[in-house]
Length: 276
Image 1 (cartoon, one colour):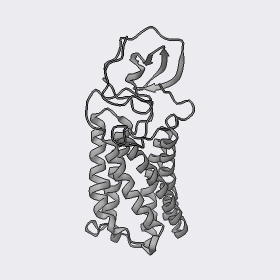
Image 2 (cartoon, helix red, strand yellow):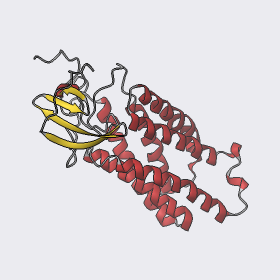
Image 3 (cartoon, one colour):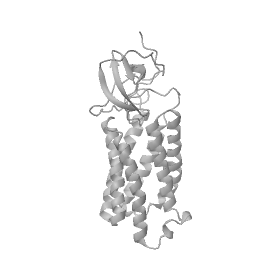
Image 4 (cartoon, helix red, strand yellow):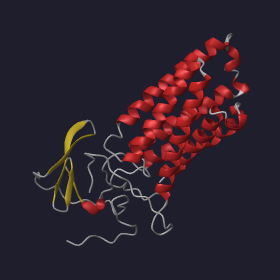
């Protein structure tokens, strides 16, 4: 059976093609990986050129490997909705805000006041990233919808904390109380980032490392608020810069294709990552 005509490059990173699937075939003994899909334990199996995701069968060219440019950490079929990929937009907004805030946390060039970012927190890291997360809902990307939507809310709330119009910081009677409250605020995000990181263990190395540094830099900043340690704040800034660079890496990976760039990034899958 010949493969249908494709309008995008077909490689291990970007296998865009039609969403049509073959009828399920009998269970194949060639076991690839145990997987959890839609709350039920299923198996990803293969038989020749056919890959089974639970009770659905696909040709290999119809599937896409875990890819940071799509912010999807698993083997998946492309969305049936033929829309542009919203992930690079969301990743770019997250990475920009993280990079500049982290440079300020590092006290680069003696800058310590992050208020220059209030507008970016509301409109770029907040509204735009939240919008990208909602678009990921449309294209059936649950992981990206959760991550981008949640961090869009993070930047909006952080912008509100910094803004005098909300009078949040001035409502605390002592600096110690404010730092502890900010520590509690960040602790909730430490837990969220950690759970998202756990979902990348079968993706790609760059994907995995990006979420590791996101979790790690938020953790260090959380501890810095509780201890009021300038050194830990600077360390969190350094880790945040690294996380932002990984974010920009995946932003580029999601946009760059053979048709528009001489430099197309190819990811390294982690051990035991299901792939076609």
